[in-house]
Length: 379
Figure 1 (cartoon, rainbow, N blue to C red):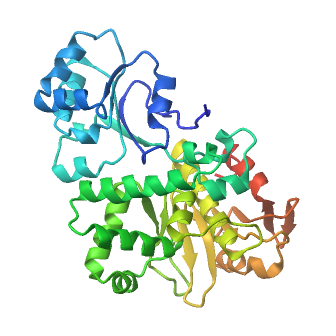
Figure 2 (tube, rainbow, N blue to C red; figure 1 turned 90 degrees about the vertical axis):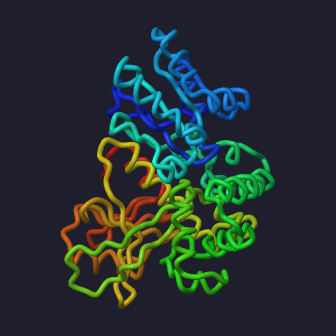
């Protein structure tokens, strides 16, 4: 059992949606926080068939149990029609609902009732370092951070099954894609560009489809919470900057498996890429779990000066290097960014043994950085 950081800050007694990819631990979290809730699990076939055939059973059941709060509906995207009943119960009876699901795509695309702003939106992500006692970086990088995968002695079959059963089959079915083979190929190519700038034309050429189809596939990954864009920072640039976004899959272990990386060792190029991806997962989760929900960007100029992450309105600039001894050459991007923008903190995250201050830039061991991040000392 992990002590999760998603505590629905700011929700008070409001109804809410909780979205998250499969196996991030949504049901476990909700059962821990709300052990006495009235629960409807739409993954149970009998429950699904019953409520599909007669959605007003939900209203009848809730009205007979108004002393039991909140009401949780798990996998709400499977029956979007239930949202009409939910809306009525919130408006007329003050019922608090928690609506959990692995993908908002079906609801968004179906034109279903979105409750008119009566439910706040939250997400649950894979595990983060502060949720794991005796956190093991190499285990996180090689296993990924979905709870079952991180805990497993040998997670490769689990991850392969996850990719086959969920990423390929279920998402293909939900998105109503006709060609499973092309989408499977797209997933592999998208993994190759994980953490890189997205070039739709190149990916389309590799997959044998149009650039428009590739854009649609990326949108499917974003809608189903399997990946997200990292936009470029473009505020009042003095230098010419790259505007194309980057794209990250939601979990480093999934990316590793799609790429067939095998076991990743420290000191390798693959470790550097996975290490950056891991840091991004931590920063993104922090930005969404905290009260101060701040945007994240990357910055790159046409002359190849780059930093990995810009937090907020250029308050914090971050570069990630897997090196065990950062040198001044690793600071070029941070220095260039600080010449253009006022930065509160410039940070190089590395595997250095101890923090250092070099030319006004903090060189922080990754563990120190994460401790400060989750203590609220970075943003």
